[in-house]
Image (cartoon, rainbow, N blue to C red):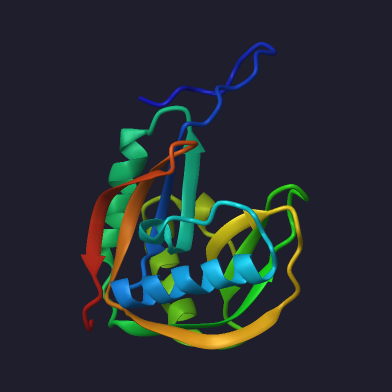
Length: 194
C-alpha cells in the first residue's frame, strides 16, 4: 500500500517505488547500445557506472514515484496499456549528448537527431488511453525519446554516432525499485496491427 504525503509539517515519505511504461531494445540493439556507452565513457574518460544492459530502455510515460506502490494505479495503468492496438515500428537513435540537470549527475543519453515519428504516434495513442482511464497527470506534451547510458558530472556535447535501430514489438509496465537498480515487469503488451 502506498503512503500518503506528510501532514502537519512532516516531510513526505521518501519514494522507494517508480512506475513507468517503456520500450526495451531487442538483445542485439541493447548490446550495441551498451558497447557504445562503454566506448564513449572510455574515450571521454568518464569514470562512472553505466546502466546495466538489461535496464536500457526508452521511458514512454513516467506514471509516478511513491513510498510503496499503489495497487489501484498499477491496475489502472494495466487497463490503459491493454486497450492499445497499434502496429510494430522502428526506433532509431543516432546521437549522444548530456541532458541538463543536476551538475553532479547529468544524464548521458543516446537519442535521435530527428525523426521517430512512429514512436511519437505510439506515445500519442498510449497517452489517449492513459487519459481515458484517469491517468492524465502522466501525459505531458514534451517528449525527447532517449536511452540513458550513464550519469556523469561532465557534460558531453551532442555528437552523431552510427545509427542504432530496432523494431519495437512490445511495450512494458515496469516497477522500478529506486536505489536498488532493479526492474520488475508488471505486464507487457505486443504491438499488433489494429
